[in-house]
Amino acid sequence: MRQSSLAVDNVPRRTALRSSEGTMTALRAVPRQAPAWIRLSLAVASTQVFALRQTMHRALGDLARVYVVKVDYRHGETMMYVELARTDRDEVMHAIMMTFPAAQFGVTTALGNEHVAH
Image 1 (cartoon, rainbow, N blue to C red):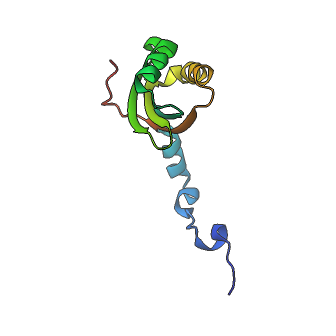
Image 2 (image 1 turned 60 degrees about the horizontal axis):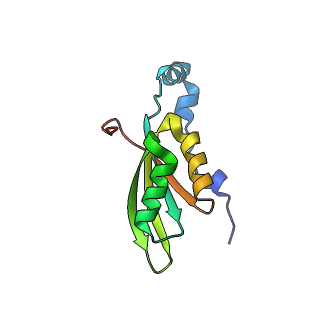
């Protein structure tokens, strides 16, 4: 059986965009606005939900909102969401890493325009 390269044999090529200079100019002209708010998922090795929330609020202050999503008592960890302004991302991530050095960051999700900052 012949092995094939996925990159060569199975990936469709987008030649239509490359062939038309007008199409490329139009695509470059569309401004892309970054979302104002993002949501970080975070796993912390503790099941003490109240203490985790208190510690997180002390560390982040008014920079972010914290939600406990799931507590896994079997593995001893809590999954949390932290919603924050995109401009505060570096400061919030630094504060989380200083407060919970063993925390594991998960997926970051862009929140839509309907998201309301409280």
